[in-house]
Length: 217
Image (cartoon, rainbow, N blue to C red; front, side, top):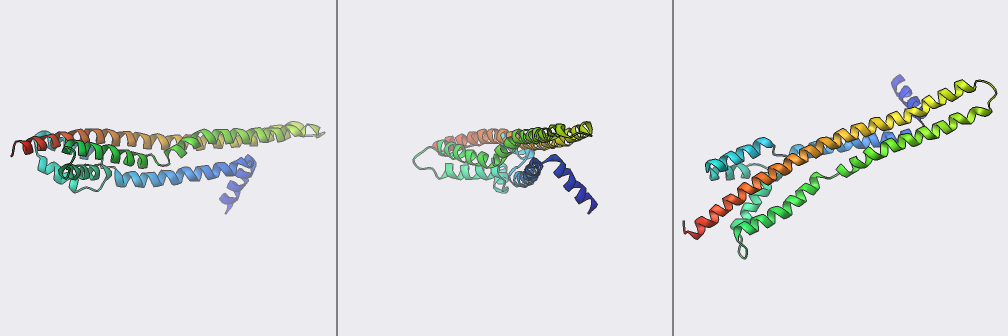
């Protein structure tokens, strides 16, 4: 109870913008947790891409196909669906059908991976500005005590010190949001790299299937 009262007093000292900064900090935490769970479900990991590439390099196509059909993450799921699209293509060649499917669906998957990241980038910019607004507002109130006959210095320095709380809080919120944003952008780039590598190998396999089909094997 004592800690709660102390936190409430701290918020009140920082001014009205502290409540907005509190909401932004809670939003950063909520986005971080939601994205962490989503990426955990959808990211097959670098090990999957390496194992798939090793199977394709060794010519173990059946093992590679069994590998992607047994996984539920976004990358193996797209690859499995692209292979089915290639095998069932009628008007287009299998490779064209697979490429068209992977291009469209990978764009959709990446858009979902980017969900809420723009919000984090906005918070990175907005939080320091809100903190600065709170500081300026507090300093205006602090310097308005010049008409007081006694205790002016103490009142002014105390008011400025409390006003700086908003700036410090805004910077802390922005730093946390920046770290969270950078982490998920890095994970997204790794997933994109894995997609490009695996899609290229899958298209090569589809070319092999097409040549075998044309040769009557």
